[in-house]
Image 1 (cartoon, rainbow, N blue to C red):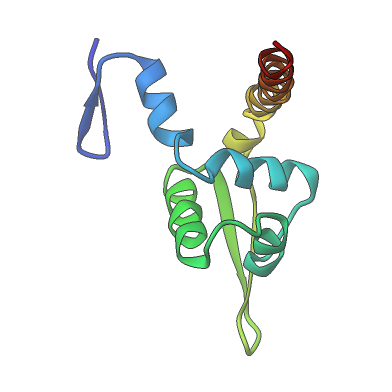
Image 2: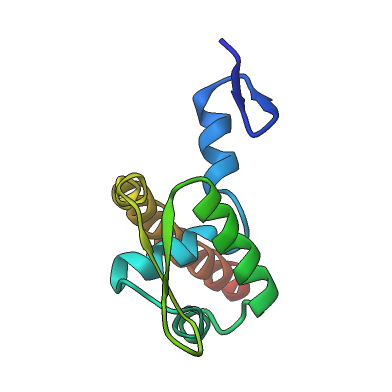
Length: 120
């Protein structure tokens, strides 16, 4: 069964899911919003200091377009924009937590592997 989404064809739901949450900073942005929500762009930048603003804005727009996050613009001058997870985004909690836990385990594995290799 072919899934058509955003003018692309996906051959299974796994490919579709990876296209939505795949991206250099998407998992990190979602993780930040699980820790504290809502967040402004500047607050996300503080939590992800290695990400440049242009990339964060692009990833936030993609997540908003895919309805993973919502963007709320407060009617004040200057504009105040906040991001938070949508209902669909909140359903990613176990996925993102598992990925982050796996990342911690893989980091430990690499450190142990490096230590064992350098001891020889």
